[in-house]
Length: 392
Image (tube, rainbow, N blue to C red; front, top):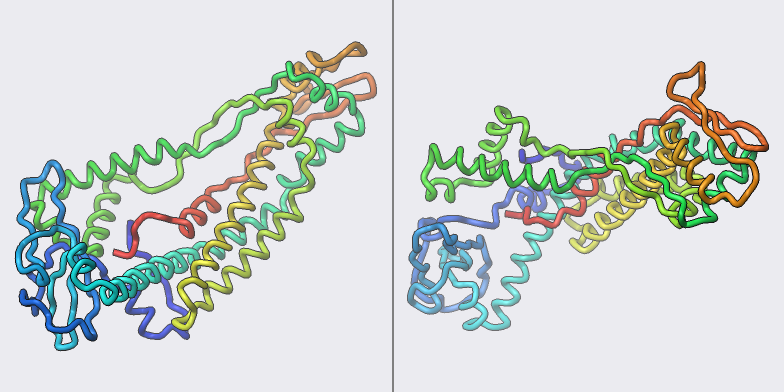
């Protein structure tokens, strides 16, 4: 909820600095300084300073409409504060402007929307630049760690010692295998966010009137939200995970078993993320908004590709885990057409391990591996692909 503080690159000049800090919305346009109600003689040099939306909610009392300087009477709740060369300001209804001014207004409105969009992308880049270093370090550690190699080593050992086990598992769709996986509970996160908003608004209304709340700046609301979170940590915006048991179907098992090594592809994703990190750090006022959008989309795709690979790796780890050995053997025996059965027995020395035996030998199933934590990737993807309104 807090506003991110990020050290701007050395080459950033005042234009993008000001844009990051600029507020594009206002809640009380009729009280702004320098307001005139008469119709302007010319729109030359005029620009939109703020937008506003005073549409009352169903639970609110009726609210008077705002007077439009082009129409000369109160007729709207949604509109713009327009500033003119001489420093005067006028209120213009959103629909009135397009109707009265045509193409001239469309150009003025387009510039305003472009600036809001650029601010949104700049803030995403700032947030990504905070997350990039830890994300790249975490992914590099995963790529170099045992968790990437272990499930593939187990698969190769089974293929060498008990080749009939894997083939038997994939022969018959009647075979069923269940694995436990750690999955993000987005419904629980959405419920928590809705509950936070409800409790926070109730807390505000205890001390302030609705008009006072609507008049608060984004910075003031963020500060009060952070104060509320300090005394109500259960609403902190952190990922919520749960353990789910799901059935792995024959086709999916074949895809899991046939996957190539994860490490080379993951290293390519890390290299791409380094490139996009450098590009976000190099953004200047001369960088077009579309170019910034392209950088963010590239970073999002690289992160999503890495997350997909690691999710498959977690599925493969669960597939070959000690906990799953009995299910694997049962599945293979159900699909087996004659021959010696497969068996799974506990390791008498190492608790939490098992042996898989077949006619051609015995394989020791590895101790269960902790799933690769995808929290950092999830947070990064949310930061660069966020679609909610942020350029207020």
